[in-house]
Image 1 (tube, rainbow, N blue to C red):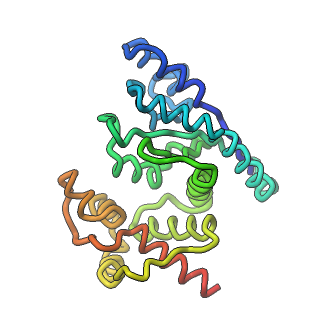
Image 2: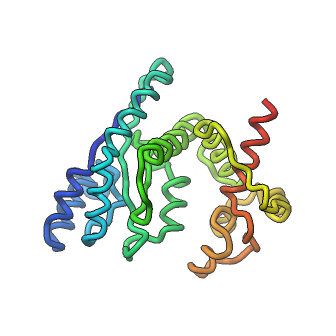
Length: 250
């Protein structure tokens, strides 16, 4: 298996330097789909084609810290580790989603989709680490985020398509184990409610339950989704705790 970084920031910067217009949108769609309508030639769906000046500034921030060169470093290390597994080539494409001023993007649903709805990407040998306009970037965060998304892709390549809450949790446990040397446990958090909720619902595949488990009542309420009482500890924090338990028992 080989990992390859596909640079896109210069193209996106040039795109955002053009006036907001139908022509700019057409240029974006052409790059996204290639020559076939409805296809996925380059996975840049996280970028808002009609983004405003603040997103262009974040693109420049990413370029200034050499984000894509940092991703290239990650790919070299991964290739050393996985080069003898098979002949697959996974193309890594950085995406930047606007969670500050973009009507194009809902942070919660976009984050969920970027982590769990991977079939269309994996079948085309793509991996898309997502970053946010609200974030401050540094070398460590670029590398860490890239690794997390790579290991989600690896999980999908080696397992059946995830369906149930238990499948989703197992994916995130795997990601934490592969990418985090020291897993932080929030000792001030109470896990009792979410533990019971998980045990009761781990065979469920209802989207509202999956979403609420990972993002909590606040996120669900903002989208008028059903609420299930996930407040103090969310599913990502719970999987961190489970990952630590598995790690310490190995």
